[in-house]
Amino acid sequence: MTWAKMALIEIKGITKSFGGVKAVDDFDLKIEVGQIVGLIGPNGAGKSTIFNLVTGVFSVDSGEIVFNGEKISHYKTYQICRKGIGRSFQVVKPFGDMTVMDNVMVGAFCRVEDPKEGRQRAMEVLEFVKLADKKNFFTKNLTIADKKRVELARALATKPKLLLLDEVMAGLNPKETEDTISLVRKIREDGTTLLIIEHVMRVIMTLPERVAIIHHGRKITEGTPQEVAADERVIKAYLGERYGLTRTQ
Image (cartoon, rainbow, N blue to C red; front, side, top):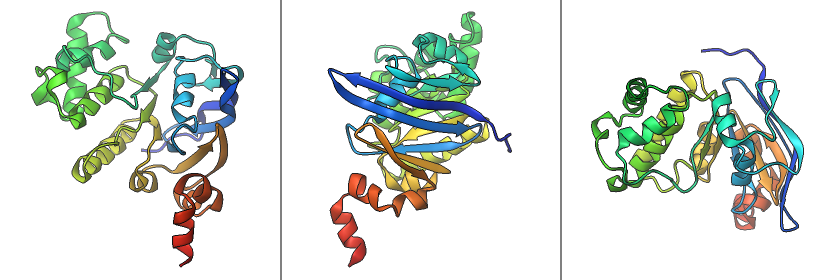
């Protein structure tokens, strides 16, 4: 599938402070339709805060976010979801005492009101993420890998144009990671643009066309995975001095 070269989202100089500390500082990022873009950086660098700003959990102090040609910087979370931005969370947040089907139907109700339509949409997504056989399981009884898939399915049920994935592969074993990489590629092939936060370097080097790195709330560089991995600023800020020394030996 090919897409027109146009920006789906433009993040322009956004800043967010908490108690006088800048969690995000003049951050810029543009993502074109059909891209997978990675966002990396040390713990506490501001990555999840950026997701929260894009999805309306927090409001920006300055700067603006333009999605599909429309300024959404001060929209409510539910408004942004209806505009076409979905997300997963770093710590999975399923409704544990609800079934897998009901969890995904919650997402479907962003687009439909009729329970029959919601169930049909949820079933389509569960088949897509290969969880249809567990539709009647209570989510609290699932493995962490399946809980992550439920959360991903719930986000997909909202029919997002842009999907934000926050460490969706953290804690997975190699087979589960490979399966999730394949699933993310299928999501993109299905027409969804993605912004992903990951610490698993094999994922960052495999999936995105471009990667941005954030440190102390500021973007320090952006480029292809290969360019970013070779950048000395990235090694010092994210991979660490020991990695840099190892490379020179």
